Image (cartoon, rainbow, N blue to C red; front, side, top):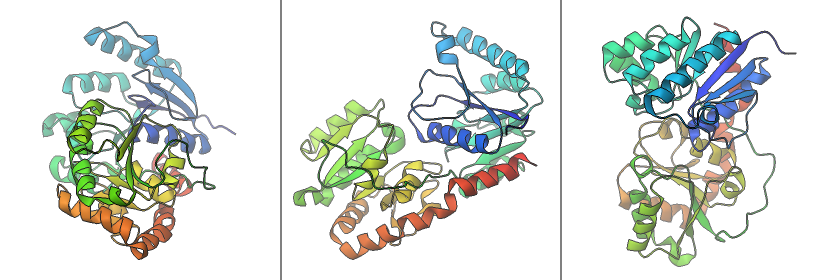
Length: 360
């Protein structure tokens, strides 16, 4: 039975991206805990499953532009929270602008606020000004971080004391899905946003080219949407990899593509607690990742469930790709250990941690 607690999850969208995927999963956890969940999304983009009521501001204000749109959306949120007597808010957005967050602080009022930090690039989530950051966020109920390293950065740079780390959860697939049609027979997989400034596709493609694993039939499958698609295609052409790399649009159900991959790969400049890594391991698929800030080193046990490689080193990454494909013993070890290495991130475990947090 539902209790009387109501909670709003405020996100940019419920579309492409790890933070958005997390918002959907969080709604299922909160629903299981008995909360009445309200999703408030800024943009009209819904792809992930969720529980609760959806407030799609992108649809409600499709024609407004600039500051007028922001003010109208803000006033609507304030009215909605008041009319529905919502006293708990999880803010899942990026928050880089002082003026906007001062306005948001007014909108939220004296409610219990849990601000989320999904990336080691802290300036995506709060201003670099220590004074304004502490003014806006210092009295929040909790600043929830997705990795211990992010929490330590918040404490070190801003001297926050209201911090807490809760890892992103995973859902263990119940069975092996049928292999999707029209994909390579043997492939390594990248999935996520096609954004060069975050995901570093130049490193990925250079390392794949140098590994030469395609000479023995292993191709690279890239799945996702984003603004860098054309530049990625141009890089593929420059490296003469048109027949070795395949790009597919965002797939809502990514699990079958993960399960049939030899391994997944991540080459980001920075992360938080990358969903692609933990979803891969949950599906029983080994991972190769650069040791970027933050997250991979808290997930990957080198040569146990995957390979952790020095960042920005395409030769080292190429060797890791080659080792995962050519070394059967290494591959089987990592595959055998994949799922059990993320059992501590189960929905049940992470839901319990959220219950403890919200009960404080």
